[in-house]
Amino acid sequence: MNIINPATEETITTVAEDNSIAVQDKYHQARKGQAAWQQVPLSQRIETIRRFSDLLEAQADALAKILSSEMGKPVSQAHNELKGARGRIRFFIDNSEKWLAEEWITQEDGLGEKIVYEPLGVIANISAWNYPYLVGVNVFIPALIAGNAVLYKPSEYTTLTGLKIGELLHQAGVPKAAFQVVTGGSTAGKALLELPLNGYFFTGSYQTGKSIYEAVAYKMVPCQLELGGKDPLYVPDDNADIAKVAQAAVEGAFYNNGQSCCAVERIYVHRNVYDNFLKAFVAEVNQLKIGKPEESDVFIGPLARKEQVQVLEAQTQDALDKGAQLLAGGKRADRKGYYFEPTVLTDVNHQMLVMTEESFGPIIGIQQVSDDAEAIALMQDTSYGLTAAVYCDTQQKAEEILAQIDTGSAYWNCCDRVSATLPWSGRKHSGIGTTLSYLGIRTFVKPKAYHFRK
Ligand code: NAD
Image (cartoon, rainbow, N blue to C red; front, top):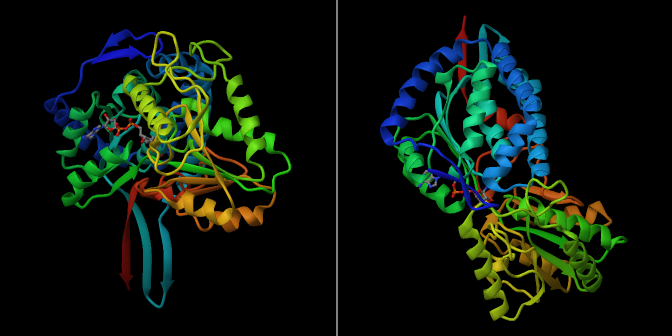
């Protein structure tokens, strides 16, 4: 596999892809390793993860540069990601003992009942490239803490980061057999589906998630899917500071070049505040600096994948053909690398791909609505269900609207946000299952119910 720098289109290095024999070999080692890792006391497993977090902190500069070079994220945003990942690890360190401890339910009249949480066994973590640290730690950290072995397949677009994660976990004290990095793309991923694993934990697109769900269904083991979104943001007319809202919406739509599962992907604005919002939004977009990821004030780097440039071109052209207006961008940037200009389209509707298909890039459609009811109907008009945001002055109004939207996360005056203490889950085509929060600790164990009669 050639590892390409998307900012320069040059090959950084070449890495061997694991074939099915190599993947099977890693599986056999993991099976043995899991039995031993489970025997390590929970407190020691947690200490190991603490050391891993310390290593992430100590090596942050080098890790941020590696991530940035292989997927194009500005180095400053790579640092933010590493910091965020350490925050999530801290949550698991602080809370796992409580949620994995055995629980006595009844101890009376000669009857004892308790629940013991046992690890699932050997699991696969097939991951995405957009936030390899954040989406990775959601899975492999609680999985390892709970005593599972992990076959971790990073995306082929963040292979070097994946290998580094493996190296640092081993350096921290996780046995090599208990955490194995599987390198490669879909062929290596499919090889994992062939193995008799005890769980599949996937982050990626709906199309791949669906094929994995179908492929492993007969095994009757947990299969968790964290998939894409087409996340809406609504701006009703009770907004005292519309410029502030526009600024937040730009950040939500364009951070990480729009390559976030919970990026704002479509915006609806009440007609009473529409013109002011557009003006402020476009002014803000025009401030975004495009450039080399290593430059400190760059906000928009290259896209991670060359093919996505064509997807964005096609969405723009489709919208323009159907009557949309282009207020900013609309084309690939005139420079080397997979750059696309931050793009704003208005006069859009749900006949257009930009309002219905995941864009996963720096492009946004803004649609005017007459009232809240129209906004709610449009927000709901999607096969996805990851997040939805409402920006307005009253929490009650926002809550009333958000209660009617079928998503795993609901935001008032914030967006594109994940919290370690809250469950992270998608609905409909955005996935199934939960990571983060106490629920995301319990995701990686199976309960055993003990009944004791004296
Ligand atoms: P992708 O589906 O192309 O690939 C994801 C992973 O699956 C990669 O490791 C890839 O090598 C592997 N893979 C590909 N085909 C496979 C197959 N047939 N069998 C097994 N494995 C296979 O997704 P991507 O481009 O890496 O990630 C972008 C997508 O991920 C977007 O849709 C985004 O919204 C979503 N995402 C969701 C979340 C979330 O928490 N819900 C987080 C991050 C990204």
